[in-house]
Amino acid sequence: MFRRLTAWRRAGTPVLATAAAAALIATGQPASAAPADPDPRAPVNRAFERAAGEFQVPRDLLVAVGYGETHLDGHGGEPSHAGGYGVMHLVSNPERRTLEKAAELTGEPAADLRKDTAANILGGAAVLRSYADELGLDAADRRDADAWYPVVARYGGADDDRTARLYADTVYDFLEDGFSALTPAGERVTVRPRETEPELGRYAEVRPLGDSSGAGTLSTDYPPARWVAAHSSNYTSGRSSSITHVVVHVTQGSYAGSISWFQNPSSNVSAHYVIRSSDGEVTQMVRDRDTAWHARSGNPYSIGLEHEGYVDNPSWFTDAMYRSSAALTRHLCDRHGIPKDRSHIVGHVEVPGNDHTDPGPNWNWTYYMQLVRDGDATAPVQLNFTSYDTLRSGSTGAQVKAAQQLLNDNGFDAGTVDGVFGSGTESAVRSFQSSRSLTADGVVGARTWTALLSAGTRPVLKRGSSGADVERLQRSLTAALGRTVGIDGAFGPNTETAVRDYQSSRGLTVDGIVGSGTWGALQAGR
Image 1 (cartoon, helix red, strand yellow):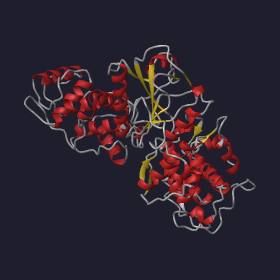
Image 2: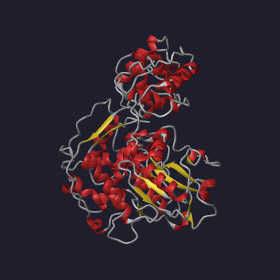
Image 3: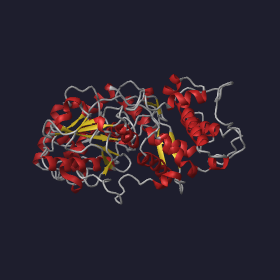
Image 4: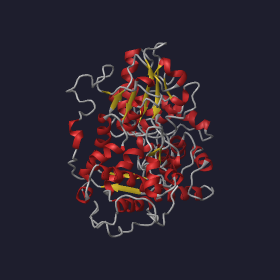
């Protein structure tokens, strides 16, 4: 939800030090002047600019904090695992009350801070500025993003200094590298790369997590992992059953935030391992021999892996995360004698007696299990092409591999994915064609490609959607229309045009929205 705010400070509302001071923010504009008005069609960019100007927080720093927390996705006002809301993850739980603090500082109702993106960003800026004032940052300091490091560390809410440093380091890594993120509505928000030399303050004396110069900071169960113990009240020592399963979770929060939450004695939850989205870094928090509290009935016999992110936002599920998690799962299976199959490597949603949905429909189980079984020796099969050739017996190459992989994924045994169109592949093609009421000639032409590439679930997709399902749609449209549709996982104007063209040419309702009718036509090879 996004509400246009008509007044960024309400008369008579208690606020921080006056933001009209004649100082420059990170954009180089005087704080006393209204910031340049961003495109009104870009409301999230507009909100960051205005909040940065209102509270003299460097704009890029403010965006980087929000990106680290939520990838700029407010999730419709639904809370995170720690009771955090909105793009800036304003928290309301017994231990932290940044939501209530933001309400006091801005005069915005708590309900708006939870659900309204502009209000939430304003609240995040207000909380950051309040911490900056308490730490003594003056006008010159506030112009320098590097001076905000202790403020950012505090915003993460961790009681443990090492976890607080991890949180701040992550934000400054984003500033250093730069990033470009799409909001759920399809708006692009960009932070350009920059040199950073953060002023660590007291955190200069805090050893980073996993620093091998200190004893006990690395995992003994999985040497590549950091070791940070969960609070002892959040797990059970020992086990009542042998280890037979690995359970895949999604944190519904950030990496550092989840580590902090498992250290909080009031959370009553933990997992054995947490995996970071950006680079696949792993932190172990409960020893394999002990029982983490992550899957109710599955706790005694399983090891829980939490993956940074949110189930409804596929941007968190990076290749680095998949590969790192798969390497960990492969290690656990080898160490504990767990079969490497989907009966023993399961999602939280699949554990009996649970009401969670993670890892959700955006988790690519096919790719993940391929990595678990084969490791890095077998690269993922390429599915994205600018056009799809007609394939028949005797064809060879990357597109034959793609067809074989898709056939196998959909239960039609094409045999080894070797890029050679032999009798086994032809038989699988004929069987697939018969199942879709297509001419069973064993030739993969436009209609068979369209049906193969689109096979799967039928989520509603529209402008602003993103992720693996959008890529699947874009591949299908490339085959169906006989022209290149950019395959980038982002449902933008070009994809919408292609959808409308397809709907029009197939006699469907032309609305640019991919629902069950459009999916059904694609999956029938029309």
